[in-house]
Each structure stands twice: as structure tokens, then as C-alpha cells.
Length: 452
Image (cartoon, rainbow, N blue to C red; front, side, top):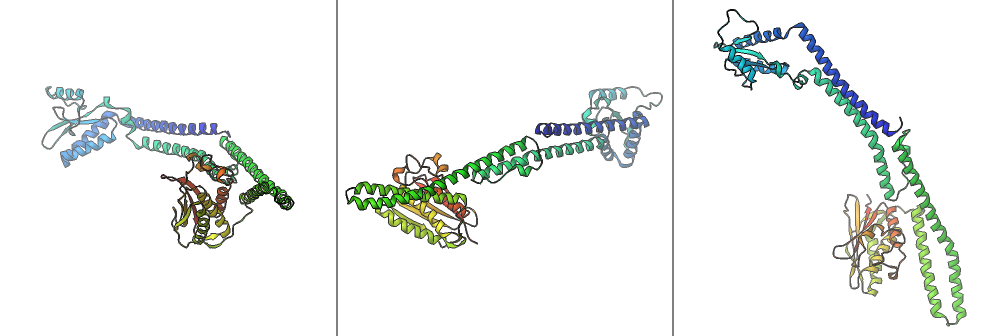
């Protein structure tokens, strides 16, 4: 009984039984009432009382009142009733079955009987016009029976409400944990592997609970693997620092003893050593950001001032390569955060744009205080380089990711600058996205919450 299959099966079965049982009860109850009514009075007696009541209304209130009475009577009576003149026309101008018309016309053309016939139900209007009350027993249908009394409609409505409530509870029972799974999946896609679904399901034991436990196990394994990967990266980076320091000392000693005879080779060794030192530094920064060791300060900082400083420094270096960095729109804007960490993140993105923008073009920076949502600012950094393939945009901020055609290693960098920038911006509650511009180039958009 803990399986989802049986819960769905039994829920729909119970709903069907409720509806069918209520319908059968209503029909049986109505038929019992109808039988009791027929036992008390015969159909002929009931119709004769209708004829007498119609005669009283016609004499007292006239033909219009008689029409209203007949219309109300037809809505409540199971057997259709007509009031016909000698030509077979109904008082309410309804379509009359041919057999009733022929019967009325035939009896109207017969000689008057010698004595009164009690089964012939007459209603005489004040102007002496004679009508006959004619029941049509052959027109009684199931639909006419079911829609007449409230004893049929009320139980069916109650049954429909109860079965609908059962189905509503079942739908909620099925969709609530699926919604939790969806939210956990969205958190995992955003890089947060901490949410777990199974503890929120209580003692539930069915296929969805099994799926939630398997889902949590998968997230746990991914979290462990990523944690071990980060730890390995951090450990290796730390371990490389010591031999690298010794290598730099040995390089200095070698320069002294070479006496200028191996300058080119020693310069190459020094260049590669500096690149390796830079790589290790970036790896350590990335591992600290991912592990949460590097906590940002929370102090008021002017992001406009940081953007202006970064642009000035980058422009000084860019002009040596026939490129420029221009600030199109900056306003003093206060946010809370770590000035050094944000400066490094923005500088990484700006330097990346300067590296790949075409010669004789400018990297453009802008700051808008009104972002897509209230309480956030937007920083746009746009270059005029070759851009990146569309399918590579989601992976642009992953560590060691390079684009072969446009941003390969020969252009410089290790593929860590954007990853470090993204981690730093996320620590401040923001995000960074990239998109190709229609007229060429790449735009990086940074959104950050504004200090209140």
C-alpha cells in the first residue's frame, strides 16, 4: 500500500464508487418517492385534480394565468401535459405529437356522448372556449425523469464534489514533492548542491520518495566529488609553491654563475616560472572562493569609483597595443562589499575584453543604477573582438575553458580569470552573464545589489 501505483489506483476507484453510488442512491430514492406517490393517488386522479385546478385558475384569473400555471406544471411533472383546443393547438404554442392531435380532432367531430365521460379532462375558458388536458405518456424519457426533482440533482452534485476533492488531494499529493525536486534541481544548476528533498517528505514511502532519496544520494556524491576536486586543486597549488620558490632561487644563482653566457635560456626559464607562479596564484584564489574561505568584507564602497579606476589602469596598458578603454556612463553608486575583491573581478573581465578586442577599437564600460529589477545596478563591459561561438557562452565562466577559434592560449591567460570573477561577484549576491552582440564583439553584464 506504500506504492504510488496502488495509491493512484485506489484513489480513482474510490472516486468512481462515490459517484456511482450517489447516482444509484439518488435514482433509487426518486423511484421510491414516485412509487409512494402513485400508491397514494392514481395517475388519473392526479390529472383530474390538475384539470380542476386549471379550471379554477381560468375562471378566476383568465387565460394568461392559465398559461403560466401550465408552464410551471410542465417543469415539475414527469409526464408532459398539453392543453389543446378542438383543432389540436396547444395553449403554449408547443409542438404537439401527431397522435394527440388526431385523437383530439377525432373526438371533437364525434357526436356528443349520452353521458359524461370522466376520463375526458376539460377546461372551459370564460369565453366558453373548450380545451382538453392531454397527458403524453409516451414522451416520458430518462432525461426528463432525472432533471425534475432535487432528490436526483443534489446527491449527484455532492458526489461530484466529493470525488473532485479526492482527485484534488491526489493531485496535490503527487505534485508537491515534484515541485520540491524541481526547486532542488534549479539550485543544483545554479551551483548550490546543499538542498535535500527526502527529509521534506517525512515518512512517505512510494516511488516519488525513492526518487527523492536517489536524487539526494546523487547530489551528495556530486558534492563530495567536487569538494575533493577543490581540495586536490588547493593542495597541489600549495605544494607547488615550495619547489617554485626554490626554482626561483636556483635561477638567480644560475644567472650569477653563467656570467651572461645563457641569458636567452635563463630568460625563458624565468618567463615560464612567472607564468607558473601566476597560475598557482589564480588556482589558490579560485579554490578559496569555491570553498568559501575567502569571505568578502561588508563595507560601503563606491562601485563607480572602482569602475573608473579599473578603466584608467586598463586604458594605460591598452594604448600600447592600439586599443582603448572608454567609460560612457558612470554615476557614484554605493553598495556593500569587498572593494579589493570587486576591483579584482571587474579588472579580470576588463583585461579579458582588452586582450580580445580588435585593434583601433575601444572597450566600452557603462554603469546603470536601475537594473532589470529594483534595488540592483548593472555594469556592462563590451568589446569589439571576434566573440565566441553561441554554444560556448554557458561554459565561458568554467575554469580552464578556452574557445579554440577566438580566445586560445596563444592570446594569453589560463582560462581562470572569468571563473574567479564570477565566484567573486556571486559572493556579493550578484551575477555575470555574457552574450554576443549582433554587430560583433562580446558583452559582459554584471548585476549587483544596491546598498539600501
